[in-house]
Length: 326
Image (cartoon, rainbow, N blue to C red; front, top):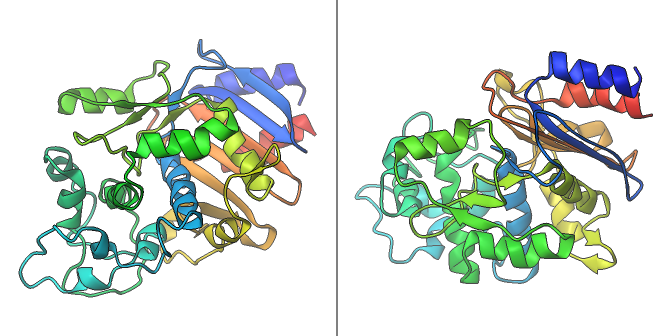
């Protein structure tokens, strides 16, 4: 398939793709836009936000702001009043949150209760724990992951977006991001489902903490820089951004006991696509992906506007995009 045929394929088969950017051997080898998007426009990358937050937590660990992933979650919130009878919450660690193995009360994400509260972190803590104890079962959550933003703030004294700007985005040449606030539930919904280009923003709670499970807006050209950083073992243009130790732990595969995730395994908020080849990805709804293949030293980023029937584009990247480029 030549470039012209590839363009036609995207328009017909993957119509919500907005941007694609690919880097190999430390240089950009492909960049293209669709749907009226410019190279610098951003899309809401959905759950791929989680993987960026994993890097931020790693940086905080590297800098000694967080001692380790074994620190107890509740230790960061001494002023939080634990519900009567709740015992499990005292044993839950940061690692449980990063691996999606923290126990919660109830099923699914309590969006309305968390997002209508004045303190999203404490509202999320209200759901953490439960009578079953720590079962170490994989339980994928999004809104309750807000606890991680609370931990990062307590550990660093910095709002999520400020921490990201200083320690990750600026060193990579990614434009500084600003918080985005929704005045009501309808505006919150429109932020999520809008098909139009966005600015460099991060959805935030009333206290200015960026949502760690979703809400970050980036261009594919900036997303692929994250992939390149991982390929370079945490170094960007000669500067150490994050430790090799964290990246190794972040991408260590852990089995997912769930048939709904196409057999993928999980690291620290990154999906492990092919454990035997250490290929991993940040994956967000609508087909927003940062794909990293250390063996071939190639990273690809796909940004897309909201389309709920598209969950990931790993097959597209491996079977259509890469064969077209190489």
